[in-house]
Image 1: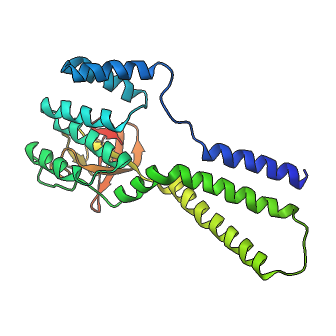
Image 2 (image 1 turned 90 degrees about the vertical axis):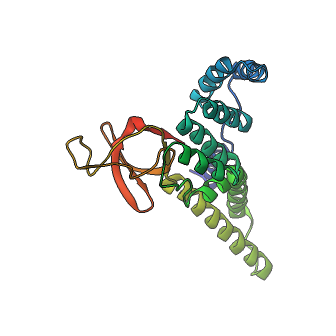
Image 3 (image 1 turned 45 degrees about the horizontal axis):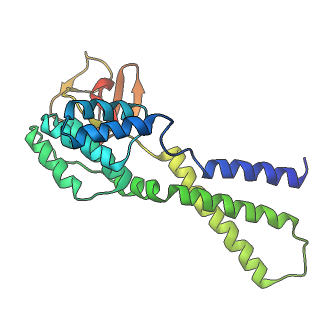
Amino acid sequence: MSKKNIVFIVGIFLLLMAHPATGFAEGVDERLTRADQAFEQQQYTDALSGYEAIYGEGYFNEKMLYRLAFMHENLKNYPAAIYYLKKAAQEFGNESSEAKIKQMMQMNGGTRLFSADGWDAYLLFYNRYGTLLWIGFAIVGLGMAATLFVPKRSPNSLRSVGLISGWTLFAVVGIFLLHHLVRSPHRAVLVEKTSFYDFPSYAANSFSNVFSLGETVAVTDEEDIWSLVEAGGREFWVPRRVLRDL
């Protein structure tokens, strides 16, 4: 295969990776408008069911997440309200929401008020700038590939510096994106009361109140109906049904 064909294939791949699908699917906009209208007319039952259905299909915006949190809080369904506040903060950023989350954790009887973890800032950065990083990665990659077709000339210090800088930038951005794809945690919110187990079985030693309802945990392993969750350096098994993925 010629160099030109290789560069063309790599370029198409990078551009596809840099331009993920976004926006709402056909028909979702109309349902979202109806849910918005129901909320504004204080028809909260219709608004809640409409928003939940849309969210269940993987579509959401910031306003919808805060409205879902508001309605669940009014229903005193605090774990669900915390979940939507956490999702909004992770996707769109809002440091002030942590105080509200802790308040609802206390109202729900929680004593361990660790509502945030070290991944919040990282994931918010990626959600804000990830698309730009992918686009930049593709452009730099194509630019570096194009240098393969530039005729070699006598040594040129400026050109050498440019090539080194370009490949360095390409490598740094590539490592960050690869890290996100491989190492980004599977996070969830604890939304139902449960005991916490030493190993994945109801026959295992169990403990109560290890984590609070509404707490964000990292899911590090799964087995059958069980998930191994970690937060604050502690790991326990819980039934998967008590978690809701962020």
